[in-house]
Amino acid sequence: MKAESANWVGTIWITVGLLVLWQAAYLIVGDLALRSPLQTVAFAYELLRKPSFAPHLVETGKAFAAALAIATAMGLVIGITLGLSKPAGEVFEPMLVALYSIPKVTLYPILLLMFGLGISAKIAFGALHGFIPVALFTINAVRNVKPIYLKTGRVMRLGRAAMVAKVVFPAAVPEIFTGLRIGFSLTMIGTVLGEMFASQKGLGHLLMNAIGLHNVDLIMAITLMLVVFAAGMSSVLLMIDRRLHRRV
Amino acid sequence: MSEQHDLTAHVGLRGVTKVFRGADGAPSVHALGPIDLDLRRGEFFAVVGPSGCGKSTLLEVLAGLSQVSEGNVLIEGKPVGGDIMDGVGVVFQEDACLPWLTVYDNIAFGLMQTDTSRAEIATRVESALTMTGLSGFAGSYPAQLSGGMRQRVCIARTLVLQPRLILLDEPFGALDQQTRLLMGEELLRLWRATGATIFLITHALDEAAMLADRIGIMSARPGRLLEILETGWSRDRDSRLVETAEFGAVTARLWQVLRGESMKSINRDGARA
Image (cartoon, each protein chain N blue to C red):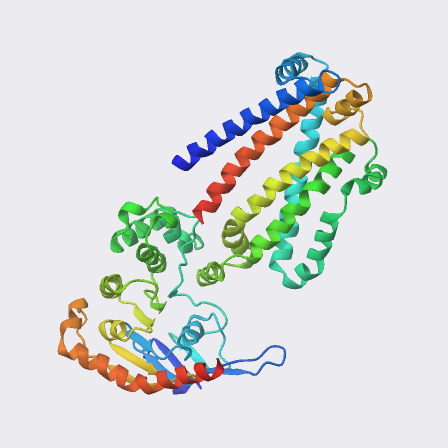
């Protein structure tokens, strides 16, 4: 309990520190390139109230949700399959690692050709970013399941499917969740990047337009929204992650 | 082969041998046997032997977790293959509690895989919780329990399946001496209450001497049975047995047979190092 409250105090202090740095940067750089924290929050509030903004928010939300669902499902299926089969893991895991290290933006033209200029390409690009960490963490999680749990499953006469569902998966959940947390962030990056490069709707598209028009208010407001959402969700996921690891 | 088995025995082993084939050109290891043994229905049988003599391999063969290289194993007249047979429960030395499940769900885990009704599961789990002194901890997670309590959860998980043969692989190996004595008493109580046949692997001579009706003494690897010692204890014994002169005599006999074998085992391990 003490550790948790100390964490919260630390988070508040870091947030305050970042706001002070932001304000200081604004005072040094000036209106040409930045807005103050207060101005940004005020602009973001107005933006959220505009009816013309909602479709962009919904578009990004839909694309991100779909990309995350696909990345999670793909990552879990690939990870569990390769984790359970040693030969398959030895063949395909290095390929996943290689794909992970490639700047995914180089593959975006191919995705655009495959999916066209619309929400599908953004979803595919987001999912492409997110599924690999989920898969890699899942592979390791499945491989690291304690042999005694598998022995226990055998003693309880579990079949292969039941063994995966009732022993392997629950035992691997804490580590898989760490992969999901990283996959969450990368899927978000992928989705917004996809919108920035080739899209007609969404926060990434708005951001790119704002950059073109040097609309500092809009750039700062959208960036703030994305950061608040990502940091908030990441904190919640981290909290769950720590709880899961504590139980083991 | 089967006509050589004592058909009244609960478990019969004939010429059981286990050789681990070396992978990638490594030499094979003759771990066990040949072993001939009959377990009487409802008896408490313990096996002691020097470390690395194949005690755990013997248990795995009996459980169906490992296949014999030669010979055969019959439980209630049926040959043991590569699967756990109905009516057989196993408790391991390692902490086998599933950490994501509560104590209640851990104990019910095996039963949930069967067709047993929810009401019957609840009755059996409640009874096992009471029997193992875990009634107040049904909703706790294993991480909240001591090592001894976690081992009791594993024993309870086996008991609810109502096994006729319980295989225990050094179940108290990780516990301190006092806790082991008390856990031994509990085990004796459960054995009397269930009427199951118990096969216990242990490295602790006093534990074997206190708990078992008969003790099989194994040689250094490849593990063979050198002697089977009848303790002659009454069924309602408890840990106060350790105060008696007879107990001292049984332990002394075990050590007399085992000393040379343990020396062999240590010398071999030393030479390899």
